[in-house]
Length: 381
Image (cartoon, rainbow, N blue to C red; front, top):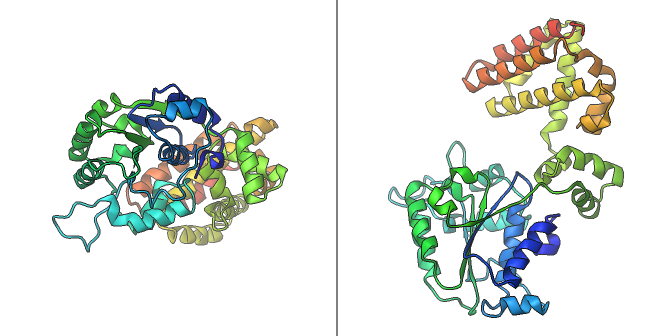
């Protein structure tokens, strides 16, 4: 991944290059921004650049616009060090503190598919179930050892830390000392989703760089060039994604849940309008098979569709964020979501989310939701 492959974020790229050109590169920086904006992509691209230049002449090279040849692989570069949250596997000894190297193969395989990924995907790659991924004190000890070695090529050493807010307190304290007294020509690049959860003393010793959502034009260009979408389809996906490349990819995924959720939403509304209690009972039985996390995701989808169908009635395309299939359903259905029932419908869904989160019986929760929708759909504005 180099900067030419990063989607949008030209302002961040220019800022990072300017820091190098003006010889003001901080030894520790923290990239922050909303989900799917490409923080990791920018971090990897910048790491590749740093590993390709000489720290003593980087500013002059930038001023002269010298041609820089980036290393072909960060994984094979001994001066590149990745740190990320890990879990403890049953096969690990009781005294073992998991470190990034324990999951190096899984990390490489995931990054090989691209630098745009979520925590859920990483948890799946590690084979985690209900565990909490953290960065342990073992990781800070290992990183201290690695960074104490001289650069193999006489240039920068880069420590890229993904989600430093997941460091436990022992690791954070050790990392603080490492950042306060960094080894020569070492640059720390932190990719942070929730900076407020990071130790304040660490935040104060890093230069924070806030990234914005990806602009729609860049998302559309990436969808047409990399995914082969038509201009119209790319524009619709980009609008739904709202600057989140991960969300754009989710919409394109063949096994996306949105298609299933739309079918379940349509079925619920049609059966509720027909007052078909027998079939609504079967519908709730199907929902029971989804599992709690999937049930909550459906209810989130339910809330979004209620909002979008309500806004559809205003006949202002700028207010509506729906896929083509969702909008086709809204053409005839939206009029049933109005001022009289939109708030009760949302309250109903929020109560269902609360009940599911508290381990209530899913079949009962969804059958109750279905029966109440019969009453709510007949309310007039």
